[in-house]
Image (cartoon, rainbow, N blue to C red; front, side, top):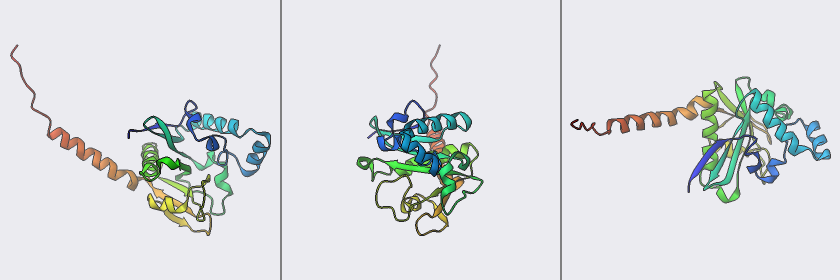
Length: 205
């Protein structure tokens, strides 16, 4: 199966699962979200948030496609762009970290490491932009798809708990350690392939 990862933009926002496309859980504070839900404006609010964040900060997520079909996505931004992050009992997020808002892989694509791939992709992108870490509020009692990532999944992809809580622990992923191994592998491959390059063939003029 061919995998492709792209930045989340207004052009591909419609490729999010319908439930996620209409959700503004992270993009609004609890009171703003309630108002938007009563007015039926959550889809417009999410689009406005993505547009503003792209303009002010840059890429705020990745979309994964498998054989051309949308298979999952991840969203991340500094805490000042994520009103909901201040509403958790284990807030605030550390000043040197971005917030992993949500990570979702469609059921038919789970079990293939796509979630880990999305985390690694956003980690590498953030590292290049000078961000030192990613923090997330995990849901310890996760039983069904939700806007908050299961704490167990975050632990499985390298996050460490920095503020425990019976339901909403805050976890942290140091970015340098996350991407350094991958960069080391890429450099080693480049050197190996370079050493295997064939000698140039000189042809008489």
